[in-house]
Length: 338
Image (tube, rainbow, N blue to C red; front, side, top):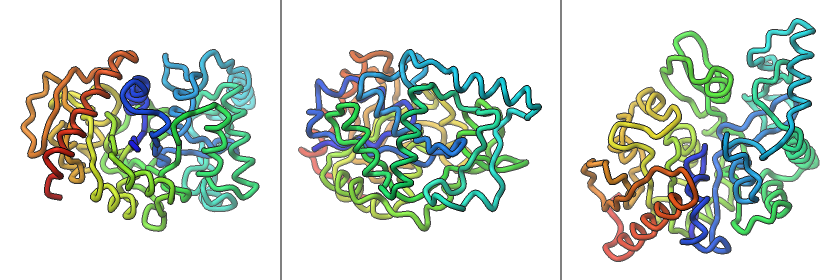
């Protein structure tokens, strides 16, 4: 059994070539839920859905979001109608008293559909409608995610990190905002002072996620260490399981240059050096790392180097083979002290 920790686009891109290296029937993907939102009453799980659609062969790989060739008539008309009504179409939170009312899983991340700021295609919207309805019927997020995975004929087992709410909240000099507002609504155009994982003290890792990690080895893909992987690392049972199994991480940096996204700004905000060295500090449970050929960072753990830039499935397969080599190194040499 091999388990991948997935968030953002880094790990899903790695998964696009992993089938040639890791048996998908013996693979579990634990997805980040820290950037889930409730938008207009629909419960949206961006990181879960990127894996769901990529593994289902229907992902829009131009944007790495939503379904390929999915019309956006409802979204476009909703935006147009909001503007005609005279509504400010920037991200609009529901009132504070509504943030923790009703569906517990949506706590601290409720947005109005007025001026919908995340582009949701029409078929994509159907996925969110069905997910929300099944949650309202009393099913857990793990159960609903596995049901959707079956519908898309996934061979990997896809599970959320938790069935409880954990919301990634970005703090700026003037205000706090959900990560989706920061990254999608504002395109990352805000100074970040800190990142809070609200609700994590009361949340528990899902049993399915903990079991998968304990069954290891575990691969931490080249995802954002703060908002893609960080929420998982606030869950004690999951961290304990990571300490007990073989873990290989792929750096999303080449020394101090990040491949994509806001990882550098966010890492600096939470106190880590924005670099491969900072990633190693953030992942003390990792036994080995896969680094780019051009990354000369000296780490205190085994390193396998390759070209880690992933633009297509062939690139992903190359990186996945380096991950397998790193796993074999750990299994041969033993775990690093943790």
